[in-house]
Image (cartoon, rainbow, N blue to C red; front, side):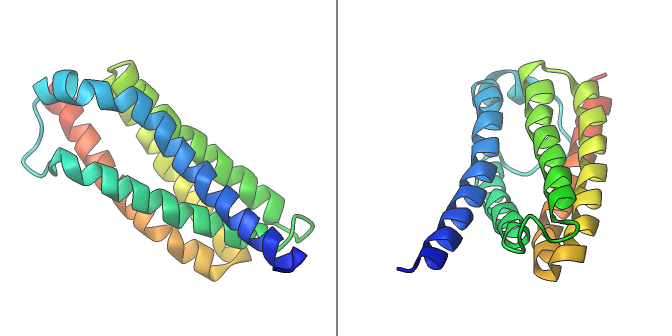
Length: 162
């Protein structure tokens, strides 16, 4: 394997693992309260089964990792790459924050506030990524669609339990 190939593969692995790690951090705050606190909440009829969330998020974090890799591959000296990666990091921190606030702090309203900010940050990220890599931008679309659904779910849970 050439040095260039090794560098490329390393960046891909780092990008995916960083995103999956964000999911792992969120799971720390989520897993223990699903069968207790979350199970006791009133939920709307469109709430998916709990087993669906894990595979959905693993897939979304994988797509996010590939997207950030594609941007990183353009080179940090390429105009817009650093700011795109910065915006990506902002949305990733908000993603983690949602789990901490909604599940960890058991704050339904706080979850609404964070998820709205997260949705806006994802949109900003997609717009930035499209300028660097059209493929990276497209890879983020399932994420914003899922967070759109999750926003409706979070808002509904908040309203049903307020």
